[in-house]
Image 1 (cartoon, one colour):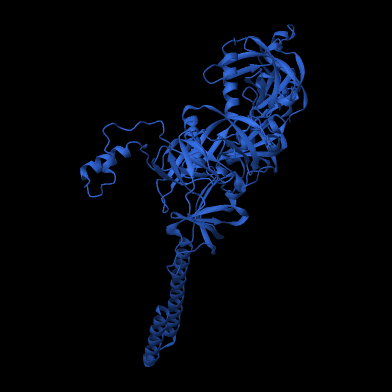
Image 2 (cartoon, helix red, strand yellow):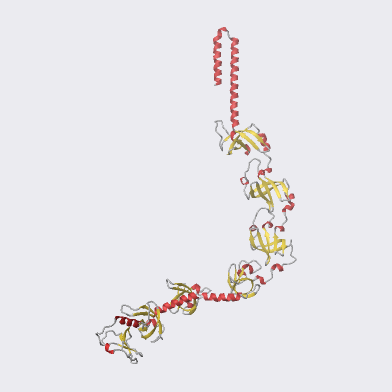
Length: 635
């Protein structure tokens, strides 16, 4: 009889057909047993030498021992650590279970790892994970729980790679979703956005339920698994879409349910596939929002306008189910007729007026007033206004209509010559400036131009903004009327007599006037003269008596050296004034000298008539006096 030590064995003795577990006497450890093999049915070898058993003097051959050991080792399974293998439950109790994996010794696993299945019993096959072939006590270390986890992860990875549908148990709710148990012991995360294609507000209704999922993400580093139930629904929807779209035809009329309403259109559920009705295809008339036509969950008939089978997009229409309003437009309507409508759209260039639902006409901004200056449609109309207009053009083929409202009033230019004859005086409103003049409005639709040269007789105006501003009233006189081209030439300075007729007699060449330098440039200075008239002094004529040059803002005497009535030009000089003063001083000194000489000569003559030869000294004194006076004069 032979036996081997099997390690920790349950306390109660377990019978087997060929094995008997016996607790040896005198052993202190209650869980150590010997296993005896019953060989009563085995016959001994015929050539076995029983006498050699007790012969201790016989030496054993080392090679034979090694050969026998190798043969003995081959009777056991070859296992490696950290692998999952199949074993047989030898015995099981409330604390532990003994598992035989065909190794030298059996392994023991805690009974808690088997409680998930209370039906486990001796002889059942289970998978175990080999943690260690031999621990510090020589015990084979096995784990059924780890084996299950590894197998579960293998199944999770396989399900992810093959996109298989798996079943899981919704264990609990967590932040942002649900915790799901898959493959018995793997906890996965189900995000709230992956529960259904529709937004889910109450997650608790799914707790404690079994559901089908797809594995959509695995993080092997952190052992995280993400599953999705929505993916299954989307797959079903895509299959339904493909089936429905394969039977669609343009022009086909279907019944659908309003699923969603946006500012740009309406989504319709056609029984598993969605289509879009753009806002422009809801009504022949203009609408500001789809809710004016349809409501959520409303059942409506729609027509298929187009579809893209590859992109799963379907374009639907609602207005196409009714005739086009242009086809039903009054056939007697013609150009020149008056129509009424409502302003539905405003743009800078005009206004769209809905004459009948679905039929619109455009009133261009130029057809809103007889006025020629630029304005926008917002100055005349606003959305929602009820207006009356005249049909200017009507194109039924192109479905276009142009309207006008200024035609409801008489054209002021038809009687322009009678109302604004040449020479008549009026008050106008300044509307716009240009570099060459001012556009003014005499009345609605009647504009005129005041050229910059017709603003003032005396002032030189570089830009009209120097003279007036937009919105001001200004008096004008009509200079010319061009009714054919709708033009009026106006003047402002013509309201007064031409002051240059008077200036001609005041600012004569050679006359001297006091003026103030108002501005200067490289060529000279502008001088403001009496009566507000302006003259020009060239740079060489600005030299003063002390040889310095006159400065801006100085008030000096200026001499007129040139006057042009036709060109309205006066050229003045301050230098000439200084030269005239100098010449006047020289003439005055000559006159004084001449008068002194005549006085002296007269005195000498008077003396000569009375003197004698004895009065020579007196003559000498007179000569000295005359020379002295002459010298004083020269000084």
